[in-house]
Length: 613
Image (cartoon, rainbow, N blue to C red; front, side):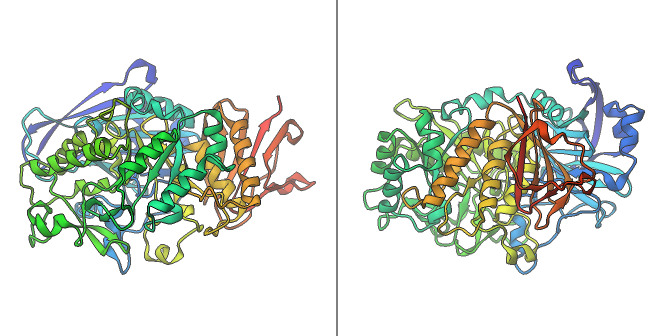
């Protein structure tokens, strides 16, 4: 494919930078569209001599690769850090984090020195950000970056197998710019992606959406009795949702998660667990003053589902063997699972029926749509087009409605979704891996799965993608834990998760049993609620300053801190902080009498200080 590139300046209020437009000159197979040296990127972004010099220490450059979807690694890579390119023993797990085609790079773009990025990537030297951002959310194919730190090269390619190109058609639009500081980066991205209209679609959920979901306490073991018991208790005990939302008369979501259906891909109510169906429960939720929520994974099927058995033509098949495309692995779902051929009109009709039933027949209006990345697999499609074209069309069907039959507003939470293609349809979305009531899942970590459920990985993603919050997405960081039962997190770890989620993301979800909190749980909850009150009203960011260590900062400059996710005490250099001028909101540091020794911060902790008024 022959590409014609045109370069224009970004608007004056961006200060510097260029917009690169790639048009189809002659049709053919699209792949790599550009290759830059670091110096060429400096020129495009308009860096001066001093800023260029800051990037001269190649080992000191942090790389934010961007990540393909919600569960792809979302954190910066420092020095020579890299991500696993395979998963041991269960290779299907790689499908949960890596884009199809990631490993099919040209021979000169492979090897341990090449990192793979997507959508928005940046290089950071201290507080200087050199960023490349793709405009793929507005109908363009997804863009993949390949970054070689050793050779100081970055390439860009478009991925759209099956795409029929037309001469003059746009293949990609990239913005290359420079930002000084975390909040400057956010401000520029906010201007680039102009998401205000999309964010307004979820305004009825409140400035910071919040609520209850059943998954992280009950998992799939739910039934009518359990859900109604939690519903009854939510407003009666001093849990976080009551203190933070209900007592302040803020909207609250009450979401029923996986476990209500007959089988994944068979979205009929399991009558053994919910003998009255879901409609009476959604009505009870609405009558209690909450927004009824329901979990669905619309593009998925398992071998146990009726669709897989009765409509095999709906299941996407691969071109090599005409076998169902394996979309991933989940030990709770008969191991391997598969995806639908969403190019088919009858499948789109089926998706519309799912949403209509959930909203109008059952009464839910906060719909969590999960595992959406499975709509991007290539295969033998019934209708022509590339996976991204079919995905956009299907997402438009899923999110076409903004109210139910009664006229009450409705919203969608995206999860496991390709980040670059989804922000217009799912402004409220998960931006990281699933969390867990354990700090990490060591066995799955040893397999090399970077999207594994764990508190640690979820925190890394929440911090790493905090630059997207309020700019591209309203970031859902997953739930917090404040309970003692069925939870192995320490008090420090619970506090850390609760504060990171509040400060660096955009939604607070809770999954503890509201009727089984201990006195210690309630005391911790009250303290967290008070901290939320003291910290609200400002905007926060975090910058990685060491392995698993981050500096917390606020836009106002009044609040700062250290987030230490490492398992070791972390020590600063020589301390110059006027400690008598600050208040400690959370104190997990040791300040020796001789500050030449530095300051020591406890492992798995957050320390927050505020300048005294």
